[in-house]
Length: 431
Ligand code: NDP
Image (cartoon, rainbow, N blue to C red):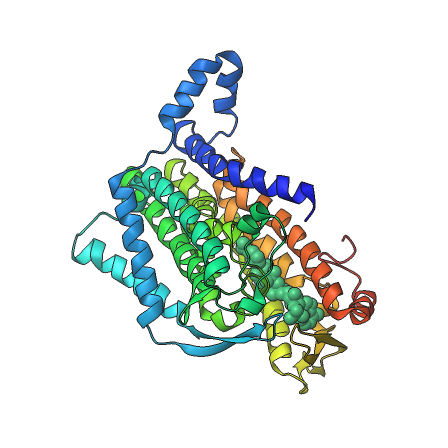
């Protein structure tokens, strides 16, 4: 493991939680400006630091209680709700894991239950999450760290598949990137649970709470807030609706479960991906019908590309060695072969038609178009609500590079042939 990679992991471990807290302070105390707290730091550092500390999120009993109930509720729903059986991809050691995919039902039950708890039983206000954001932030960070520590310990002392562990030789890097591929307690999959339940279900719940907050302060919900809620709900629900596809994506198939995914799904995702709605809750924006229509069209066009590209690849792969047609024609492909760690030889195919004939990661294009559509409703006054739209391309570029290095190692010369047939990495003619 290179020294720079270890230093970078250490830096992310230390600074990422502080960065999220800083963004929260900017949003709540400095009117959404990312630089306003820094202005004060230059003029009068002690005073500005005192101001930052005074505005920082604090641990609260309510924050821990709400987070605890949320976590247990999601675990219970994942355990008890019925669902279809799905198979993951073959792991490097040759295992093929079975999943019960009940994410769509868990998402629906969660939202209906919260609706009943708010409007029928009056247990709490619809703005509960928004009001307890600071306490929830601290609770989510503590939980993300504890889960990462538990994942590290489990990999050493009670791994689910001892032959699927990956040690880098550096403890800090292992803690950050993870060691176990698919840690489980019995049939309970820890990775799918944290990303696909604790984090992803929270996304839309947080957004609705922000819309409720806007309604309380403004007396109405703006078109911009509706757009953010609807577009992001489409994106989130899509993942649950096609959860059997999700268990064969890089997150579940290749990434190990460490701080990056544990803290990332429990603390980073619910706070950073919801910034447009959180921003609009305090800074309402009224869009003209034409602007709203254009943003909706961009978001839906992105979704159509995202959906169709992911579907083509997944259906093609599921067809195995059988014929698969795209646009009325037989799909073209590059045959590839690889050997799993258990010595088994597997034959597979790399799709080169449809979206996959244009670029080696066409699904990322649709994803970025949607990310831009999530932020545009916030207007152009502040950068803060554009965080996701700026962060996602960086994440996907890094992901594409990582994925291609792994695929080259896995498929050897077949990957080179594929690259020659489909030269564009993401955007045809650009990269
Ligand atoms: P993909 O679902 O695109 O999977 C990449 C894998 O697909 C490769 O590792 C390879 O796996 C296989 N593959 C690559 N090329 C081909 C081909 N031509 N034909 C057949 N199989 C191929 O990647 P991701 O998991 O990164 O993305 C899934 C979706 O999730 C994307 O739409 C992405 O935009 C989205 N995403 C969203 C994020 C967010 O935070 N919002 C974060 C990350 C992803 P194998 O070893 O099986 O060959």
